[in-house]
Amino acid sequence: MNEPISESVDVVIIGAGFSGLYSIWKLRDQLGLSVRAFEAGDGVGGTWYWNRYPGARCDVESYGYSFSFDPELEQEWVWTERFPPQREIEAYLNHVADRYDLRRDLELETRVTAATFDEETARWTVETDTNKTVNARFLVTAVGCLSKPKDIDIEGVDSFEGPTYRTYEWPKEEVDFSGMRVAVFGTGSTGIQAIPEIGKKAAHLTVFQRTANYNVPARNHVLTPEEIAEWKSNYREYRQAAAVSGAGVPLPDPKPSALAAPKEERDAAYQYGWDTGHIPTILFSYADMLASKEANETAAQFIRDQIATIVEDPETAQMLTPTDHAYGTKRPPQGDDYYETFNRENVRLVDLRKTPVERITPSGVDTIDESFEFDAIVFATGFDAMVGALNAIDIRGRDGALLRDVWRDGPESYLGISVAGFPNMFTITGPGSPSVFSNMVVSIEQHVDWIGDCIAFLGDRGASGIEATVAAQDEWVQHVREITEGTLHTEAESWYSGSNVPGKPRVFMPYIGGVGAYRIKCDEVAAGGYEGFELI
Image 1 (cartoon, helix red, strand yellow):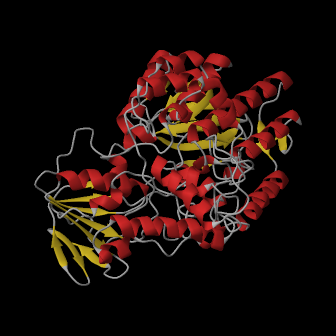
Image 2: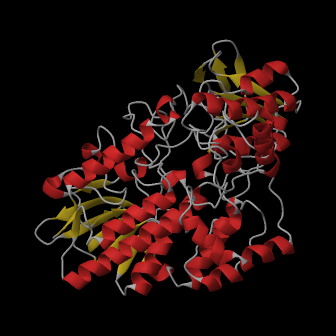
Image 3: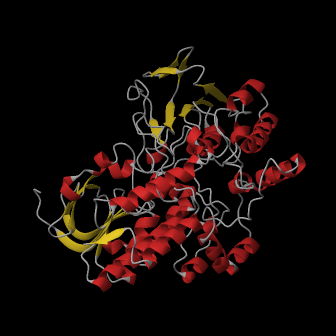
């Protein structure tokens, strides 16, 4: 280390989104620990700080996508829309930071570049790009699952002479596309939200699509006073149900089998989900939806039929119709007016499977069939999910082992919260936990609460720290794999398994056994004296 230790604390926290902010509150205000948090951005919010593109909003209902730790907070904050827009979530997290005085232990515009575990002292040395070096007993990574963008693998990407925008680092000031010829690359969740908004303003919008997606309308609306009052009067019951649910969102129990149900019943269930704008209503309406191709096909075909009904041009409708993966095996997008946007005269869809891009040029885009001229290009091309942000940091555990090398063949962890060989390091919503298969706030709070209890346990025992055993990690990795192998996810190319990033090992990373079942397992581990861990 070239830099002297600038500070010594109990805990270093990386990130200032939902998980980073809650970690500061929990570990500092509830456990009395000294903490230092670092955030690369110049404001709090994490995902909701960086992703401010047009149409950005959460696909979990606003009152459910919020902290539960303080009943006063949930009663005083008023959400205005059913599905919260980016600006409102960012405002909420700024309110939380101010209300609980979290900023005094947070350094903005500071990126953590390295973290090294010292086996003699059982402490971490954390380095930043501001030449600050902090020594800490515990390292908590609150870096987010979708915070490291994947590289844009198109020739000539830097040659375009007009403005280019990446959805994951959108300018704070409004971008006005009025009168412009705009290209958008990407039709995943982000593109599906952005395309309708850009299409309303641009003189002409060309959408370059590699993979068609099953989009379900959000049916977003401004909340009425009656809806707000109902949420607030039922908050405690909702929180309890969310904590033990499958995806962190309370839902009715699914019916046993789509194949056993009469077609009329199935269609009515799917139509209800389509009309009410709630992804889980369709995806989790039957227990075999993600286990049986035949069962899944009943929902997939229902959505295809909606596309054919909405999109006026048959050729465009066919291009927008997904046929290469089962519904829900890629992240299921949710956005209003997506398919309707392609009925606009100023919007065109280009299928990159049929006409691949050769290069981006100074004036636009060349495909194998055609040259396009644009005034602006927008890239909504996705993330190196789950592990990208962790691998971007030089994290070294026992014997100097580098985390990205340890994970060269895919991430392995115990419960998605600890990695063997990296003592006193906790990965909030890491690979091997429900994370992106859940309401993230529910999973974040559960992880941070578990970490807090674990650190308190260590204090009671007078232990220096804790480390997952290789045996427990191997057993958990196998369990995660076995659950996944019983589903259709193994057949899909998705960022869940890293297949969107060239060269990334294909390993299905989230735990899909359910938020409630996962919570029970974590509680059992803790109740058993942190079974599967060794105290150091």
